[in-house]
Each structure stands twice: as structure tokens, then as C-alpha cells.
Length: 401
Ligand SMILES: Cc1ncc(COP(=O)(O)O)c(C=O)c1O
Image (tube, rainbow, N blue to C red; front, side, top):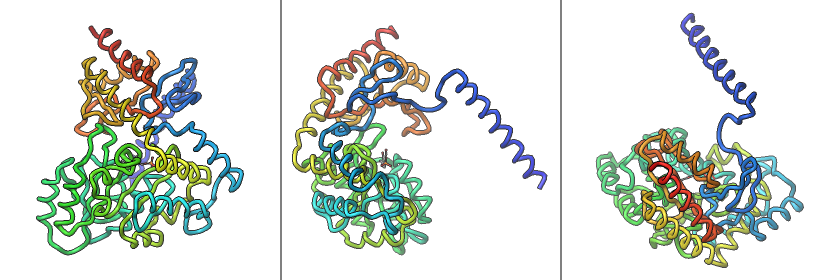
């Protein structure tokens, strides 16, 4: 009892100290954590304080956030259906638009089933925890996104990590296991930190050869890879073999929400057994309508994707020539490794002062504890904007010389 009291005392002392520091920052007019954009001006521009910056870290791959199609769909949905559903999918939160979006996704991917969730994070929690539980085995890539790790905690299955992007390591681990219980392998398509892609077809082969199902999280790859942005599974010709694909509406779809599609109609049982589906409110009418509009743009016209790849190649070549060699081949995510955290922080600040916003990613949020300046490319970037980003990086090396 005494020990507990002492622990509680320590906790409150630490919390009081933290509160004092935060209050001190407020008093200086500073915002304690994270970055604030005071005004979004376009998919690639924002105002920060009095400065206009070029955005090169927003995951707005197709640049649809300010498109007429998405804005009009969102406004019309608010007028027609109100601002929120105020309930979960299973209770009062399924509107005709949620079902229509599920139909659109089934047609787009050619799958038997589709479920729409409130976020991509929730889609992974819901799908994974519905598919495996106590007595089963879940295999996850070591570089998995936090929501896949969180799903492993929620589902109670024994979780086994395999080496990043290594079908061989997965095969060894699968082969060691007794045959009882279900087995689910989870990988991503395009990895969000280093911009590297998974050898999806090889993973599918290994998983199925060992009696496992496979789920591919295509949060970053849908919209960017495959015919009309159908993703890496489609690009590699394995959409019909992959068991589940999850994705998000918060990147290429210019909205908020997530989904899971599957060749197995049995995915539908998720709606009855999955806590993350059952116990949170559904996506707002505006978010759902925006995602539908973005999907319609993708299905009708592949030109934004072509522009995205042109700009990605331009940025990759420019950074390479400037001595900032990206960690992966050209693609929508371009990450530059820095020698240490301090250099990354200094350079991130210098880029911002030069009017360029990129993401900074440092341990423990990064694979192999790397310190990264992470850029994402948008179809809406102009050639001149990419040139200005490259010039700002050249400015960094001049300042360091
Ligand atoms: C690989 C991956 N999966 C899932 C998510 C979660 O998506 P959402 O923002 O819709 O919750 C993200 C978000 O960044 C992600 O990178």
C-alpha cells in the first residue's frame, strides 16, 4: 500500500513538472507539440504564421483535397445528410452513402466484399482482430505501422515478427509452427517511412504455401500504383489471390476513413464480431461523399497518377544530384536519411525557414532507429515547386560547407 502511494506521488510530481513546462510554452505564445498550418491555401501550399510554405509532406498523393469534385461532394453531403452520423455502423450510423461506397470499392477492386470504417487505423484493428484470436498466429512485418502492432495486442493471437520485406524469413517462421489454429500474415504495400515496397507476390506465395491467409495494408499505395491506382496487389497481378486488402481514405482519397476489401464474402462477419467496428461512430456524410468522389476521379482518369510519378522522378533525381540520396527508388514517398537526430532537426528547421515543409521522422518512430527527412510527392506539385524543394536542399549543403 505504501509503495503504491509512493508510486502515485512520483507520478503526480512528474505530471506537475510537465504541466509547468507546457504552461511556460503557452505563456511564450508557443504551441507545445506538433506543427500547425494556419491556413491551407491549396494541396501544395499553406500559410504558417506569416510565411507561405510549399508542402512536401502531406500524403496528398493525388492532390484531390481542393478538387471541385471532392469539395462539391462534401458540401452537398452536409446539406443533404447533416454534419455527422452520431452513431456506429451497426446502430444508427450506416447511411445509404456508406453502403454505396462499399459497392463502389467492390467494383473498383473486383472483390466479393468491402467494409468501410471510420479510419484506416480502425480498419486494421477491426479486420485483424476479427480474423485471428487466442490459439491463432499472427505474422507481421517488423516495420509494420503502429496500428498493425496495436491490432496484434487487441486480437490475443500469438504474434510473430518477421524480418522486413523478407519472404524467406517468413517462410522459415511459418514452417516451424504446429499446424493447428489460424494463421494470418500482414504486410504493407508501400512502407510509409522509407518509401520501399513489399515483394507482394512472393509473400502471397509463401503465405498460401504454409496454409496462412494474407492481408496487405495498401494505405499508401492505393491511388499511386496499379491501373488507375488500384494498388500494388493489382500492379503485381495478385488481387485475386490476396485474401484481404486494407486502405485509408486519408491519403489519395483526400478524406478520412478506411476500408477492407476481400475475395472472401466471409469478411462480412467483421460487422458482428469486431469491437473497432461496433463501438465507434461511423464516418461523417462529408467524409464518405468525398471518398466516393475521389474514387470516381481515380476510376475515370489516370492522369493525376501519371503526374505524381513525373514529379516523383523529378524530385528523386534532383535530390540525388544534390547529394541527398533517397533511401528507395523513385516513388510517392522519398526519404533522405540523416546522420543523427540533431542534424535532422536542424535541417528540418532550415527547410521550413526556406519555405519548404517536409516531415521529420526520428527514433523510436523509424525503422532501424534512422533519422529521416521524409517527403511525399503530390500530383498537384508543379515542376517549379519541385525545383524549389530541390533548391532548398542544395541550400542546406551550402550552409553546412
Ligand atoms: C500503413 C498505414 N496503415 C494505416 C494507417 C492509418 O490510416 P488513417 O490515417 O486512416 O487512420 C496509416 C496512416 O498513416 C498507415 O501509414
